[in-house]
Amino acid sequence: MTNIVYQIKNLKTEKIYIGSSNNERERWLRHLNDLRKSKHHCIFLQRAYTKYGEENFEFSVLYRFNTIKEAREKEQEILESYFSLDEKNRLEKIYNLSKQAGGGDLVSY
Image 1 (cartoon, rainbow, N blue to C red):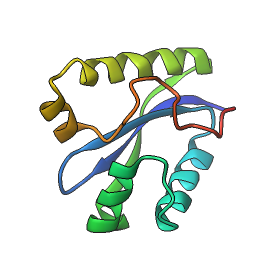
Image 2 (image 1 turned 90 degrees about the horizontal axis):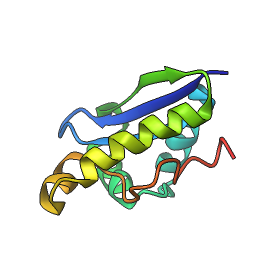
Image 3 (image 1 turned 180 degrees about the vertical axis):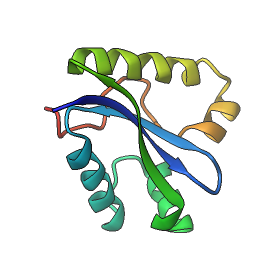
Image 4 (image 1 turned 135 degrees about the vertical axis):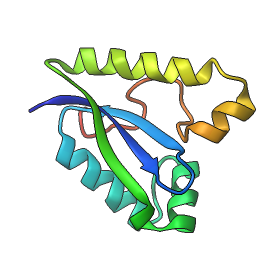
């Protein structure tokens, strides 16, 4: 398995969700399943998905690492860069509610 940092990007608004996982395919399928059932843990991402539709979201891998620890550290670094912005700018750019890496990835646990 490859340890990754990924983003889910809204192609209409350019807003992103950042995450990490040790199973790329399973993580994307889990996000899709939750979004399709309107049960995603990130309410902002869920609302956007409902509004814009699945066809306007793209999953992509930003980084690959040998260990999940490295992936989590990079995810944390990215989240900190967004959470250092003032709240208005942050909310326009990122869906993540938690500034802690790995907050929504139950696949890796």
